[in-house]
Image 1 (cartoon, rainbow, N blue to C red):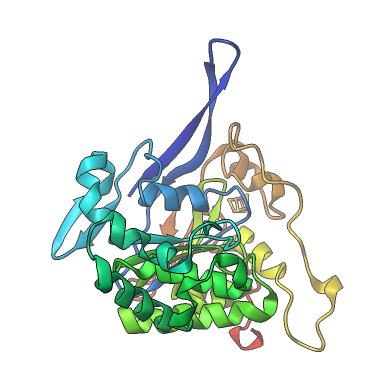
Image 2 (cartoon, rainbow, N blue to C red):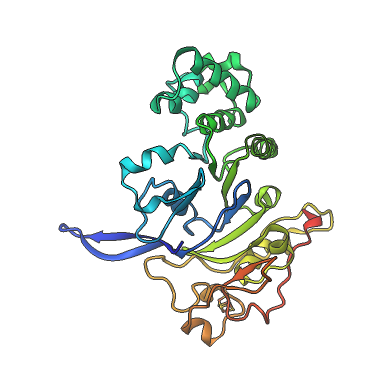
Length: 334
Ligand code: SF4
């Protein structure tokens, strides 16, 4: 709720603070138990910083991070590092690059067992059995636990990363671009595995991606981020078929479609560069790149409002969202 993360920019010998990078700029969203919520946007829009704040890998500047677990609510943002410890096990992260997130000097058994050992929740034979169980759950033969990461392909390494993330029976798994570093042929296998594991273990996912094509197949709801703010938030099908923010429409128009009649020249990339988050534009942050920008867009920041219904909420931050007839993407073409 109202989450902010501003990084100070320091210059000179005395490290004088000359400004702030507003990496996450007052965003609010919820993740329902058992769902997959996708955070989507270009590089540098604040997706990973949001995830790191939720995990308290970095401290937010302001705002609340409310975790509902075992019938109670805790605001993780208020807890000290020591008070956080019992809650850390409920939240785990799957990183983007399985080539760098596994220690090459550790055997797979020790990599997967590490959270169990650190949290002292198992020992001896119990650890071996749990590692074997986790390896089977992610589709790896338990005999491979004595091998080192270099003996595995990229897809298999990502399976090891996922097994490690599941070791402590987490409730929320944050997947930060989990298939971006993998071959296209392997991506769907990992996405299917994540979907299977979600069903089997009742997991909740926060899925971070810049790729709407990937997100379509896994997300229940999508929040689109631009320059530290959420600009649109809706159910996946609704967002694809009926986008209301020009930035979302531009993202949809940058996705190649698997249709024989589709031509590369039909792709409409987003004009211009992402502005400097230290010095964001006035009014609507998207106005320097928006084909529909008017004077008011430069002067006033648009409200983030529900233009859907109570049953089918569709939040958007654009002065002209109701007037613009934006073209979505039929989900049947994906
Ligand atoms: Fe474009 Fe204006 Fe809407 Fe911003 S508020 S997205 S500049 S039309």
